[in-house]
Image 1 (cartoon, rainbow, N blue to C red):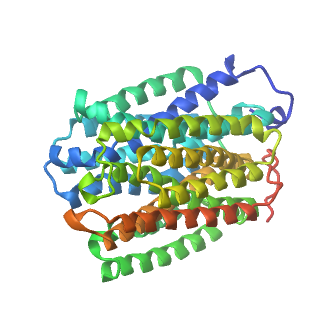
Image 2 (tube, rainbow, N blue to C red):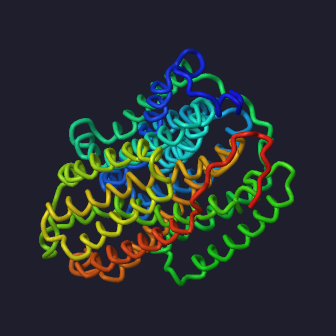
Image 3 (cartoon, rainbow, N blue to C red):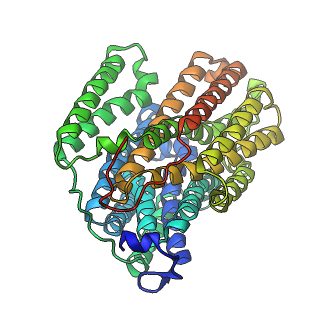
Amino acid sequence: MSAAVLGGPAPAVTGRGRTAGFVVTVLSVAAVSYALVQSMVNPGLEALRAYVHTDQLGVSWVLTSFLLASAVLTPILGRLGDHFGKRRMLLTVMALLTAGSVVAALAHTLPVLLVGRVLQGAGGATLPLAFGIVRELLPRMKVGSAVGTIAAVSSVGGAVGVLVTGPIIVHLGIPWLFWLPAIANAVVAFALLAGIPRSERGSTGPGDFLAGATLAVALVLLILPLSQGGDWGWASPRTIGSFVLALVFGALWIRIEAHSKSPLIDMRVFRLRPVWTANLASLLFGVTLYAAFGFIPTFLQTPTMTGYGLGASITLSGLLFVPVTVVQLVAGIAAGPLSSRLPAKLLLVLGGIPVIAGFILLAFAHESAWQIVLATAVSGAGFGLGLSALSALVVHAVPAAHTGAATGMNANLRTIGGAIGAAIVTAILAAHTGAGSFPTETGWTIAFTVLALAAVLGLAASLLIPNTTIHSDEESAPITT
């Protein structure tokens, strides 16, 4: 679809007679299916550990392998979508997600399960590719609302995953943590194939192979110590060496990209002020978002013998996430219509305030279930509003030809932020361990306070984003900083 059409009057339908609502619905379901794959495993790690007969260190690789694969593949698949067509690459991603889910469902040993999780990691490119399809098929005035809706529904999928894990394990069995996503992803792939028009091939090239390989090495060297530093020792030569090598390969990647005729990530786009400030905000947003959904269920399940724990089961801790799920969904969907009346930057700033308030509440009022529900619901309003606004900011800030790569890198930075947040919280809790190897209440208070401070930094980064960020959709528009 041409840029002229994108800038013209809003059509009632998009290619093949499909309505904009149909396109957004299918892409939202695709985003949710990935979010469920991402989040359903976390609460069930202990059950998975026994199922595949491994130890605590071994089962931690169930998360680490997925995180590494997602970090490496997201920007690469997003870039390939810009070149080969976003619909084609999204179908590829759905196929990999389905195959990975089937492998994981059939796994009875840790190595086979890890293969499945690596394949599932390709799903990290779902959102960037979906955003690119929206920008191609919908009129410009509808893009912000559609992107906000897809981002909101995706973030809610993470909360739903926490909710359904317990009942699935109890009533269906552990393999169904993967069979259900396999079925869902296969259905989504069919809907994409039947109902979403083909994307045009881009003119920017498939990306530089050497740049992609160098970026992959840098990301692995960064995320691996963030995920395993607690077991390796944060001051160990292996941890410090990995961080140093990550910086070396990161610098090498930037140099390669700057001199490449077909860069994986165009550094001119990366240097745009709306892009780098949004990427910084996304990194800090990830610190709080992933830490919240990764550790609050653990906090709820802490035994009452500790003196502060609620002793909730996996199922009950999931049910306590229902309010935050609802609030997050409502806030995220509301961000779409609001974006036509308020600047996306203002919505992002407004979203940061409830996140700060929610973590402050968690730090100083967590004695009862209703207090935790209230705090997480407050944060959920900010997450829903902020994630929708942040996604729209990045989509509008770059030329259309770079949408997949730019939003893929933005999503990747949010994932890296999540790894950083998890590493920080893990280190704090490990340093404040009491009887029975459970963290002390002081440890949790410090962790929640640090996350509140991270949210404050995220708010400050949001304020750096320029007020006007909408980039021309003309392919020939020059990139300026």
